[in-house]
Length: 499
Image (cartoon, rainbow, N blue to C red; front, side, top):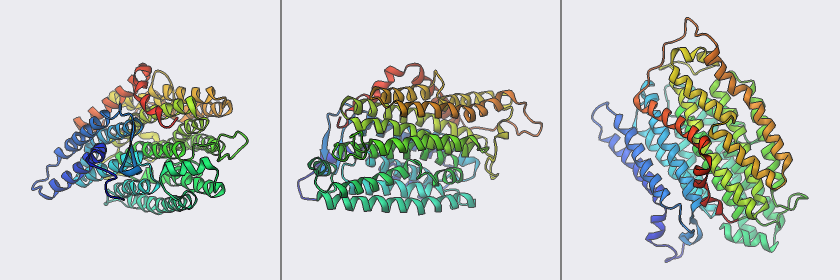
């Protein structure tokens, strides 16, 4: 990079990511100097750094937007909003993870440090405006999540899940990198602005279409969209449950942010028409959204493991966000509305899915097998009314029933689709959401309408941190559903992403 293309203000703009890196290093250093088994402070320290990073991101929401490091990254409200969601996911994961790790006798500083490093990579991924920078941030995030997936070394299942994730993740990264090489060959640069100029000029269009296809495939893998979803169920089921929630929320948010920025800022011109609509990549993304919504919901219906069901449902929710991504292909006000809907959906999904996986974690026994079916939830309302209530809130939100965040998030996405005339896309989304009612409400039914078996375990013990995290997530789900318009403004500045 030429000397003089950046200054200290560029570094200050990356404050959220830098704070998390400092937090991860601090946690590792305190672990080295630890002389006793007491590690209760580590979760609090992780939450502290997540909150500080979130405040730094919040202060950037009003940023008008400016280029950083000579065009390698960008400071704008879109990146700040994404960083806020990621910091929220990190704080909730740290809160609820402490109780799980203690119950599994695996409370070590490496867990929280890796989560901090992964979150830093996620934030950089959302800020990147150069495909090389984007690839580096993606690998920072991925390497940390690979290690988190294999964190419980006493069990074979996490190691197997981590190996699958590593092998398939490496393949997707290679595909993305090859797409980057093709983009460089066509535009002579890997910066999104330069690629956009090449797209607008119409030069090397076949090469740019190939680059778009490969880069898009790499991102679709990270968000677990069909047909790149094969890794998600096994990895989500095998990973430690708090890690599963963090991956489902944080990785998905960061990957969608990078996908939105890449498509809108680099390939937003209609010169790359892939169908009769003439809206660039609309047809390709719309079909990906349809397949992801339909197959995600249909495959979730037949699952009896609640954790695996949530894994397949995460695929379906990726499809709903892809609807918003597809709508953005129409540009102008449609792109602004689509970006706003996507950010709001990712915020709502983050608090909901982390809460749901936390309940799953609370019901897992120390050293015992994973929850293999939903019988552990039979009569849960009798044994632990509070836990059953928050789980019902999360299931109702994921199903899209008012007055919860999930209902409002789906409403914003489908309304954005209808506004541009994508009626078929909206209809498929609504029908697939109706299909999802079955497996979400099934969990509520067994908790409240089935008697507790005589052999059912007693109500699980929970630390204050886990109870507080669950309460915070449930309150957020209801608040986002009851007062949507006031909280919807959170995503409004981010909607200005290259309309």
